Image (cartoon, rainbow, N blue to C red; front, side, top):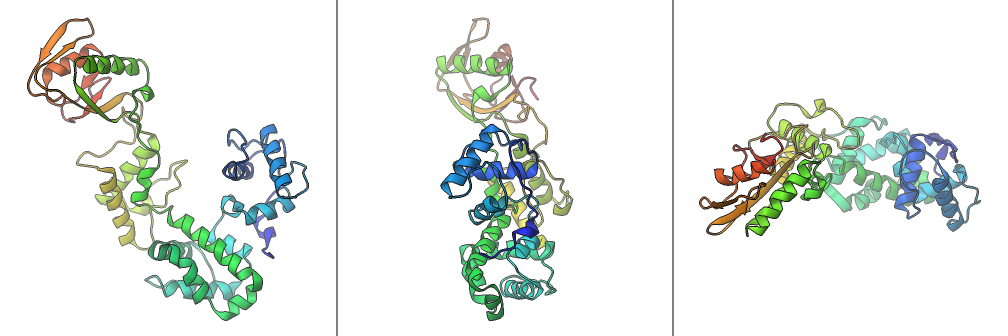
Length: 357
């Protein structure tokens, strides 16, 4: 291939190097089954060993140094998507798309999306959003579309690199499409349902209460314990956008959550937020960015029983509890829970916590 590696300005990295490029390289090696330990941006001995193994397997000079020769092979293997601060514009420069080819790409995208992009030969943020929108609309068909719609002149200019370039461009389009907000984000940063993920001493209190409930013959379904702050962030701002309390462009970013709230059209942004609200099952109560769930100090569970529940309080006193046979509304069970240090929030049926909030 004759792609222009120089535009990427990739630094030589080796043992002792630190920074974003090291982190990107570590992430690439890890995904390629060359373990480096922790992906921390610090090029240490484990990263060097993994680099040497990668070089050996790819018939490169085995020296543990990531230079242009190693980058060239890795870029073809997917490292291009790991390059720090990669933009669509920079990617196209790497693929040797000049102004004429970029115009051709913009024209091609305009046959798929509306409203039209400005055909100006500058593949900036708006064009990048258009590329993501095209993948959103066409999905796996976009690659074929681009191959067919781009002009003969573009194909002649790129020559043998045309099809590999389309593959790379399509891969990038897929990645930025799935950065867009939408219901697929529910799969990221899952909420725990494990008591072991709660913080002590609340964890031990819940476990003791749970054991007492099981011994008494109750049925328990745990819905949530620890909610990662990243998930709270996604739920919180999806709801705020959906309720018209914030515009997508004003949503603050969060480290470690590579989401794009702004779609090609405002209607697309709002629809995606609505889909997230539905997927998360958000009701009338907005999810707080910081809560007892994010602090590992709350549990949502459904507790039911048949007939009379005979359960021991923490001090060993046996309590008989009848109707209603549901932990959400039975004040006698609330009192038993309180003896273990697990307090009921009356206004939220499944919610118990360290302080009843």
